[in-house]
Amino acid sequence: MKGLLYYGREQLRYSEDIPEPQIKNPNDVKVKIAYCGICGTDLHEFLDGPIFFPQPGSVSEISGKALPLCPGHEFSGIIDSVGSGVKNFKPGDRVVVEATSHCSDRERYKDEIVNKDLSFCAACKSNKPNCCKRLSFVGLGTDHGAFGQYVVYGEDHILKIPDNLPLDLAALVEPLAVAWHAVNCSNFKPGQTAVVLGGGPIGLCTILALKGHRAGKIVCSEPAAIRRDFALKLGAEVFNPMDYDDPILALKNLLPETEGFATSFDCSGIQKTFDTSLDVLGPGGIAVNVAIWPNVPIQYVPMCLTYQEKLATGSMCYVTEDFRQVIDAIDSGLIDHESMKLLITGKVEAKDAVEGGFMQLINHKENNVKIMIAPNGLDM
Image (cartoon, rainbow, N blue to C red; front, side):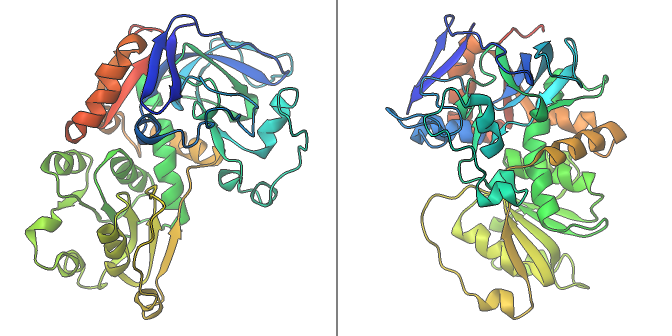
């Protein structure tokens, strides 16, 4: 099949000779890919990896597979064929795929992995597969992903989409699920207030996830004018922290009656936004870290939580139920198609995806949110 292969840091190559994945297990589903978004994690793998992908000379703990592999984990498509045990899907169904890989997925690859111990880690036993100690993703270390023409994965990861949801917009369900999970981690209640720190792709998706949770005031704090404009169009109030000597006070003055926000979402991952995520909360507020940080310590004063019984937590990717809830929010109109369209700033075929996708996002990130790759052509 045609697609992009990842060999390691700064080694992403187009090929028309990639082995097409085949159904091997009764519960396998083969999906013909329509669109796949380029994720910030894909960019990190390209610039700094392998991170989730196996290191050169090693293999995935989940699948036993080694590089090169097709990246791509934010995708939609149409079912091509199904295994003999699949009951809920048929060829022609329009779907998205929840892309995580964890202990339960090792069963699918038991003939290919060296360590045949199929027992579950503590996180998987606790029904937190997104926190699995072996966590990986199809298209991000486990198996060929959706920068190739086809993906084969287990039925338990597949979800149907509404007939009226275009396939390009459907590829946004995955990044929206990341944001949705983060909002769920904040125990969010309808009508509550929220500040989103950072107007990049996940920050913008968090705005839509908050709308899907029927939020009250949503403020996006972002220094870049172009990203503030995106946030404003999605329905958030925007705030430029560079305009104020004391941005924390200015943000809290937006809610004088509560002395701060009910929730905050750090989608940037720097010391300043971490501090802001805690300081901008009102009494009992909850700060959620959504950003992926480098392995570098930062300063932290515990009393900034203790004094007003604030909470700080993290959010790690998603679970299948997040996908279901996002799809329901889209179907009900809480997350509208027009807002989703604003997030797609480019579409390219796989053969053009390095220069037209990756390098565009690396060199012109302020002008782009999500660039989609269409491995089977833009007219699918």
